[in-house]
Length: 543
Ligand code: VG1
Ligand code: CO
Image (cartoon, rainbow, N blue to C red; front, side, top):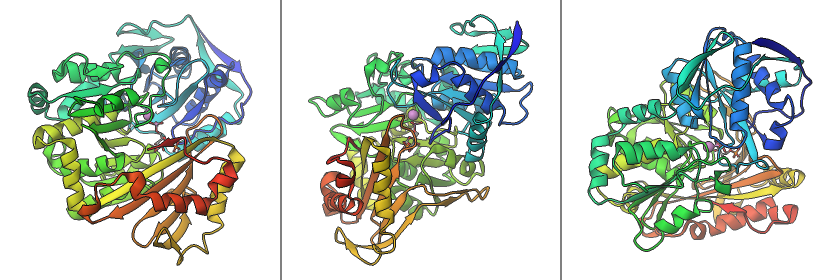
C-alpha cells in the first residue's frame, strides 16, 4: 500500500454554508473536488496524529464513493483510527453521539439533509469537532481559505474497503472500525427517556406512525420504536433507506411529508404522527388532525421537560435561532431560565451547550435538540413527545391548547421562495434594508414598527461576532417580520420570510396561522416589493 501525494488545483466556491458544503452530485464527482475539500479540512483542524475520526452519512447517492475516499485520505494523513457506520450509514445525530462517546477528534458527515438525492441531485459534507457539533465559523472559514490555496492531497492507493460488515481491519497503519450505526444512539435514547412508560403507552391502544421518508432514520426508528418499544410492525413507514430517497424530498413538513399528512388528516387517523428528514436531524410532530409548529414544539418540550427522566432535574436554559418564534421565550421567562437568540444553524448552539448555559435548543426549520449530542435530533424529539404523552395521557391537540392558554399563542409561519434569481433575491433584501431608517415609528399591519436591523450575534462564550444574519422588522407588540437568504441551497437563491404575531387572548387561539397572519403577510409583500422584484406571486413552500 502506497501513500500518494496527488497534485491538484483549487476549485471555486468550496465555501461551507449554513451546514457544510452542499453542491450537486455532478459537482462532487469532478476529479479531485471532494479530495480537495477533505484535505482542506485536515489542513485546518490542528494536530490529529493518531487520533480518531468518525465518518458516516445519510446513505444518499455518492455516499459510498465519498466514504471510500475519505477513509483512504484519513489514513494517508495520519489518523490513528476511523469509526465508520456499517454500509457508510450514520444519521447526523448518531454521528454526533459516536464522536462524543468515543472522544473522537472530530467527524465527517456526508449529507445534504432534506435536499433530494440521486445522480442529478445534491450531496454534502461537513466537519464536526470533538464536542460532536458542527465546526464553528472560525474553522469553516479556515477550511475555505485552504481550499483556495490547495496544491496537494494525500491518499492511500488501494482497492476499495469492505464497509458492509461490522468488524475492524488495518489500513496503512490506521485502524478502521466498522460499527453498527444504531446501537450507541439507541443506548443514549434509552438513558434519557422512560422506555417502560412509552412501551405501556404503545401497548394501551395508543396509535402512531413514523415516516422515515426513505431516508436514514428508517433503521433507527425500526430498531427503537418497533424493536425496543414494541410499536407494531408497520409503524415506521417508508423505512427502507434508498440512495435517491425514493425520488422524494425528505423534508418533514406539511408539503413534503404528504404520505404521513394524508394519514394524520384522514379517517381513523392515529393519535400521533412524526417524520424525520434525509439525515435524521429534523422532526415534524403531528397529532390527530393537528400540526405542531416546530417553534411550539420546542416550547412544549421546555415546559414539560421535568416529566422526562433525562431532564427531571430541570434544564439549565434554552436557546432558539433568531427566526424561530418566541414561544419558548415565554416558557423560559415563567421558569426563570435564560433564553438565548442565535443566528440560523446548529453550530451556534455548541458553545452555549458546552458552557452548560442551555439544555434545550431549537429552530423553526423542524430542528429540536438538547445537550445529549451537539446536533439537532429528529428521533430524540419524537421520543421526547412520546414520553410526555405517556405521562400526560392527553391528546397532542389538548396539550397545545392548554399550552397556549397558559402562555399565549405565537402565530407563526415561514414562506419560502425557492429558485429565485440571485440578483433579484438580493434586491428584495436591499429593498427592506433601504427602509431601515424610515419604517420605525410608522404603522404596518396595524402595528407600530419599533426597530429594523440586520441581526448580529456576539457569542457570549467566546466573543465571536456573526453579522448579517437576517433582516428584521420588529414591532412594538412583539410581532416580527424577518427576511433571510438560505445558506443550504444548491441552485439559485431561496428567500425566506418569517412571520410572527403574538396572541394572548385564548378566545382567538383557534385560527389558521395563514389567516391570523394575513395582514403581516400582506405587509411583508409591500415592504419587500417581492412580487415586482422577483416575478413571484406566491411562495413555493409554506411551513
Ligand atoms: C436551513 C434551516 C436552518 C437549518 C439548516 C440546516 O438553513 O433554515 O434552520 O439549521 O437548514 O438544517 P438555511 O440557511 O437554508 O435557511 V439540515 O436538517 O439541512 O442539516
Ligand atoms: Co437535516
